[in-house]
Length: 427
Image (cartoon, rainbow, N blue to C red; front, side):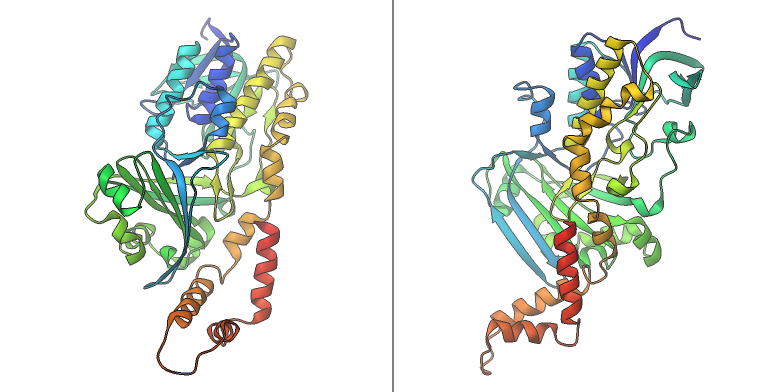
């Protein structure tokens, strides 16, 4: 047993873990972060987009040097068939709350460095093999031949929270609550990106797609502009993917060939290819968030909301890191680390993170199980727009007639109404 004891040990140097470490170190606490990757950010992957209000809450006015890629000022939603695409393209001069595209290898390394500068100790390249228990309370971690003691352990180990799971603190992840993300990072010059997306340096676009991009599997595709690269990928519901029996690598590769997206990446160089699990079970699949001497934060806790047109996870991870640090500070001040004392963590999360997950608790079920969303509706949208713009000399019809013509024989009006009502109540 090591003679050294920390006040807090954090598992994982992602945005949740580093946010908690930064706040605790700023408060003068003795904090150790153990990171499995060779460096913070080395094994992290996301689409990715960060809503920067969370950084402002973490370090007010001090995040100006964060390695953000482009401010998102253009939002594009696509409904795709194998040949066609119908898009809603929205461009904004400015938004009240900023969001930026990010590359996690850069962002995580920067945030971990901020935590170190504040006084936290970070050990990369180390795997936590288990937790130490004393009298039923979590009292530290096991890593290799070492045992490191702590008053409190915060698990921010990501969606594969194997340490917490093997210790019996949370149940194993259920297939129905998990999505799989696959991402290509394609290098292009800043000038070409600006030209193709009709933007200027520092400004960029976020594209979210539904339909044939996933070959009928429940989920969607994304494209984000970085400074000198494009992040292009897809997210699929695990159960739907399993049932489809389609090789996911082939689906991801075909995405790059779709005419609606291929024009954006033409001539680019593939510089990164990665895949990652995403917790999408939402409110109804949340594990216990605290135990004696233990807190769960970020993706490990399942703090992700996918509404189809927005996907949020990193901002919730940062907020959970802040809340975990505040709860830990209170516990240290009181010298009490019982589950009941740490319940203040859940109370802090309830103000926004848990509140949002509760509001959108039906979103995953709607997105994963609305069978027409990925096949019928994109085709209807494409057929309708073709009918609207088609001029062939035949008698013209009102839009209402064209809508009926597009829907007739493909889906009942009652099914359309049900899906619209369910979507409005879920998203």
